Length: 175
Image (cartoon, rainbow, N blue to C red; front, side, top):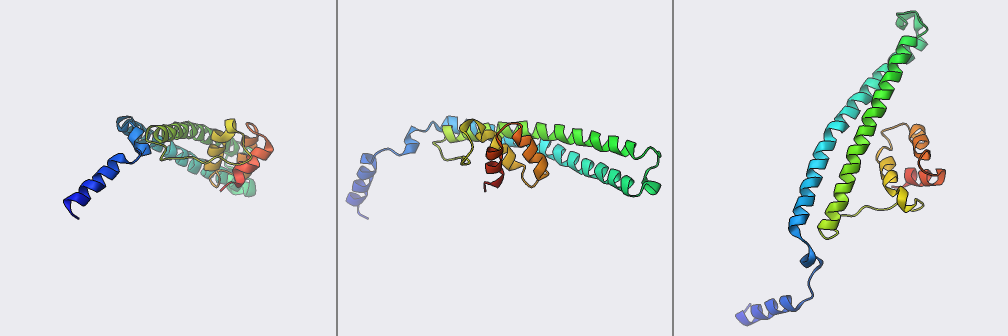
C-alpha cells in the first residue's frame, strides 16, 4: 500500500459513522465486569453448600427409605422410622435454605450480567421466554436454572406459587 492509499484509508475510517462502542464508557464497562467477576465468585460458595446439602438430603432420604423397607435392620430406635423421617425432613429444610441462598446469589449474578450489557454497549443479552409476562421473566430464569437439578413436580409446585400454570409450563419447556 502506498502512503496515499494509507492516508485515504485512514481518512475513510475517520469519516465513517462512529461505532456503537464510541459511546461506551470503558471504565464503567471494566467496573461492571469486575463486579460480575466478584458476584460469580461469591455465588460459588452457596453453590457448593447447596451441593453438600443435596448430598446430605439424599443420604438421609435413603436412610429413611431403607428404614421403611427393612425396619428390622434399619429402625434402630424401634420408633416406626420416625427418627429417620425427622432427619430427612431436617435435611430437606437445610437443602431448601441452601437453594434459597444460592438463588439470591444467582440473582446478584443476573443483575451484574445486565449491568455489563448496559455498561459495555449491549454485548450481553438474556432471552425472554415467550408466554411469560415481563415481570416474571427473572423468576422464570431461576426456574429454568434448576431444571434437572430439582424434582420436576417440586419445581413446578414452587413455580406455580409465583406464576400462572401456563407461565410455569412455558418456563419449564423453554430451551
